[in-house]
Length: 254
Image 1 (cartoon, rainbow, N blue to C red):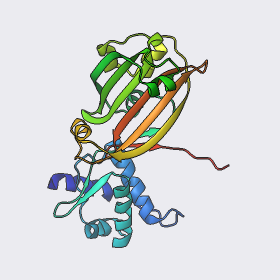
Image 2: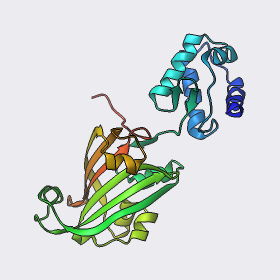
Image 3: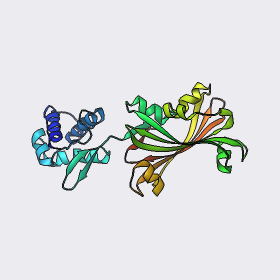
Image 4: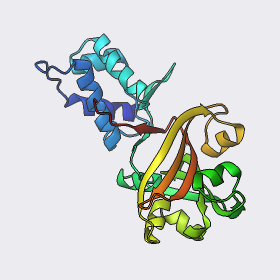
């Protein structure tokens, strides 16, 4: 990979830190590299080079460069490997907490989503699902299990239950479009949702499906979505590969 290391040095050679800025030098470097990785200017697989060489190239101290790289490690943009160096990895999918589908979020961010439909059937609603959807236990509900990918890499296993009044779905539609887009097409006006986020380790089956090591960390999400009349139209329980996915939350002071 020496060629990519040279590309990295060429990219950094045109970057100058602003020593008069109140922004710490290490954060300026980290921000510049993060934007370059996210935009693809620094491609996946590039080697950053060693800290001494980078410090000399940027005219900074080695501790400053080390702090900048550590910020990238903390964000999952680069990984350190003994005997290999520091390498750029595929940026995580960052998803803001809005009432949107993963398919829509990936498309808006310029990623190419693909979907494998694993299960598509009608089942008797288990008691917990029935309670969340506001239907009698045992009522027929649609069950959708899908594997969502970005650039052919698995991101999430998504299981959704929908009341029968929503109608049936075709596998081809679910492979090409997001679930919320299909609901809107049917005249269902999504209004609000209750969402719970958690984390746990992957089971062996989940690890195989998401191309992760057994026991790898997963982000979990449960969501109940309501229409503009306050009626539940969907219950979803999803797991995401934490190495490639994160939620983004905007917070306001009270």
